[in-house]
Length: 124
Image (tube, rainbow, N blue to C red):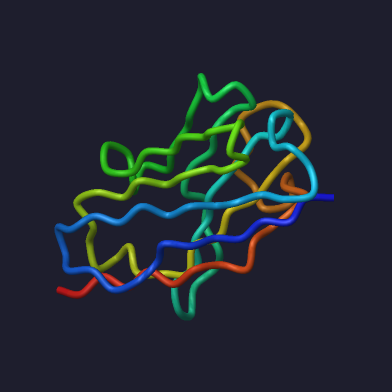
């Protein structure tokens, strides 16, 4: 079993930056692909980005390409989401997730474990 806890959310002005962290416990994340999703008020949860087991491959939604970066530190059992040039449309609850299967995983159902989410609010 893997427990995931996100942190680092908050209020930031448009154009600013935030770094979210996802700390895992229970199992090492070495053999898990990790993903980030977000859900805005009144909208469906959407894919943000994913990182492979080794950390060598990443894939991002078009809406965040060039602005967000996923990284992982397996020794610390932690995954990060660096968010730059934030826009008001980035406002959402952000969730991290872990998947035991390999590949480029962009769908909710492909992930086995989820964190509780952390709120990111971007003001205009």
